[in-house]
Length: 136
Image (cartoon, rainbow, N blue to C red; front, side, top):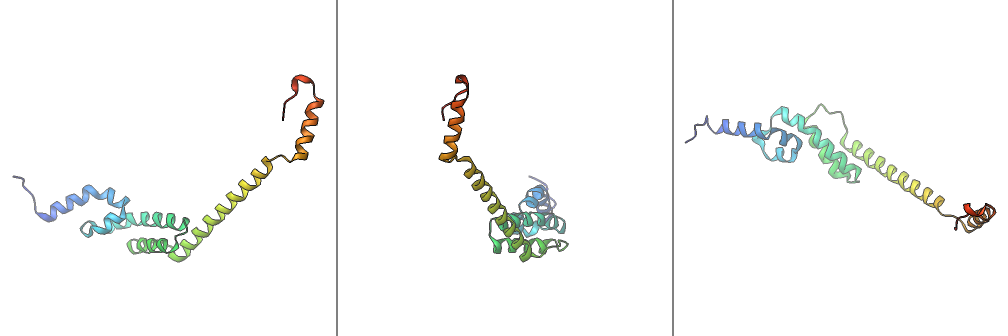
């Protein structure tokens, strides 16, 4: 038979064992009220922010706002406006996507050789000495 100091002691020991997991997975901490201490809620709040940022960058504004609000509830020292932060991240992500698309289009267009350019290159190659000729 095991000797225990009571249920409260066992719960505290279990929460200590899970502490790191709960900080990095705030959704699990959220379901275990017995393990919610001010210290680990403050630490876990950063992961609500991280998850909110991911949602916002994917264009999911409302879920991002909710996650930022949870972060603020768990750590009121955060200096953020949930709606504004989600909107800014979504807009920035869209601008990056547009910039990447423009870059690809610009470089794809320059990769194609126009028929006129091809003829010029071919005629230049024919003027070179025979060993340097290449077929285009």
